[in-house]
Length: 304
Image (cartoon, rainbow, N blue to C red; front, side):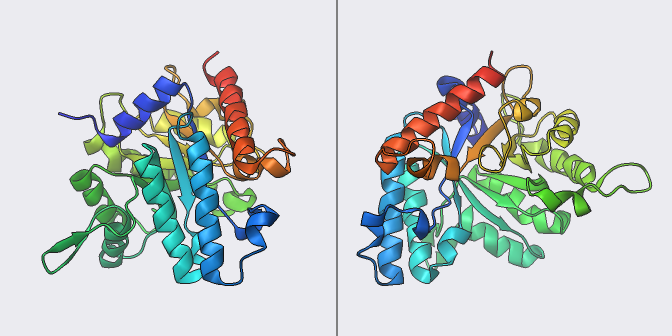
């Protein structure tokens, strides 16, 4: 019997000693001038973005376990942008990377099922079966309740996929709602965390983590510490490191005593490193250098 998806992800993190994820949140504006100048149409822009992503993947696939591809950065370029999104996730998968589609989807049950088929499951056209945007994990919004999550969990089980449910997000104003307390003293984010832990129970793998994960921002370490205690079997996807202000020391609380339990995303800090931390280098070489810097920073905080 082969290992489950989350087991494979954790095993790869252990092998690399690297719980980092490169976020391919690729705006056309992030590209070097020599890639931007020839572009005149949305199709041109999408092709340039695709080439940019391919080169980033080529330079980093051997040192990272996963990429996160934020669909909004592709939707804004229309149909051509969605082609770039599809091509990027397929190429990353071919290179052996775990692919997280950052799509934050959800709706009522029947519509949630359609979203899930698009990214996790499959659709049939007569006798032909297709997987339109074949991600390994996707992000979903659980604040519609269980009926909006159930279709995703069904596909997680049937297709060996995974989801990360929004629990405590990294944006500054997340506390306006997520930190509101109920009469019993629990906050909204704690209540969501408990639900996510329950939803994942049937999918817990050999390392003790389920395929139903949680998005928990690095910018809120106290809340992350509370959630780690409430959710011992839930893998955290941790945004907010780097450009948003979260540090490696902030996110130590997301990990268990075996240095497991979380994966940490960095987007701009990696893909635009050629403009900042590693200025003067080619963009793909700079991205690799920044990815190594991140791995070493996390290693010192988590493993040492």
